[in-house]
Length: 140
Ligand code: HEC
Ligand code: HEC
Image 1 (cartoon, rainbow, N blue to C red):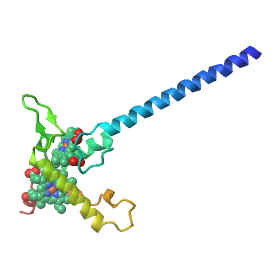
Image 2 (spheres, rainbow, N blue to C red; image 1 turned 120 degrees about the vertical axis):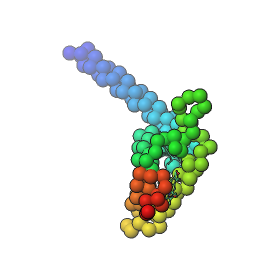
Image 3 (tube, rainbow, N blue to C red; image 1 turned 90 degrees about the horizontal axis):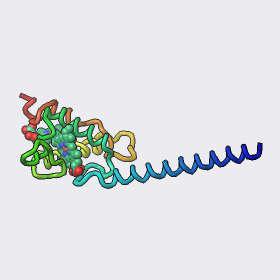
Image 4 (cartoon, protein in one colour; image 1 turned 135 degrees about the vertical axis):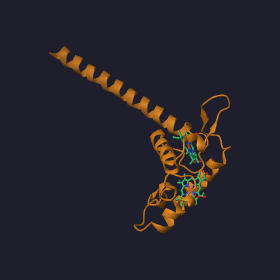
């Protein structure tokens, strides 16, 4: 009976040490990823998750009726895009548009004293662009 108890005790001890090591390990890995993943974010949060960034970018595609290559340059001789590169003017304009949209929301739609007005999302790209690059063309 005594040895059995000792056995059970050491079993759970080993198990919890193993679990602890496992948890620590994944925590370290996750924080490394969020810190080093993005190379050239100037307006979006540095620690934005992969999922959030991708769904934002897909949203831009839909809002403007374009593909990723409308804003991101193709690496010569490949069909791959260099997402961190800034040479396309559309990417630079898009940064201005992100800031403008943020300001429209923070200045005009902060009706409930939002703790972080930058996150208000009433006006968005689609509201003006409606699936086209030229937002003004829609008036005609
Ligand atoms: C309307 C323009 C536009 C479109 C379309 C667009 N992007 Fe972006 N993308 C940007 C801008 C602007 C940034 C930089 C944001 C910043 O400076 O904070 C960016 C940044 C990124 C980054 C981060 C690069 C880095 O490491 O700094 C990735 C990855 C990315 N885009 C992927 C995509 C993918 C995938 C698509 C298509 C599904 C896409 N983008 C479509 C404008 C666009
Ligand atoms: C308040 C209206 C409005 C909002 C909101 C808005 N845009 Fe625009 N955007 C315009 C107008 C107007 C132009 C000028 C082009 C035209 O219509 O002739 C433009 C131009 C652009 C262009 C350059 C045109 C091109 O050929 O690619 C990009 C890129 C762009 N917008 C991206 C965005 C993105 C991304 C968002 C959301 C973060 C956004 N815009 C939100 C009104 C808007």
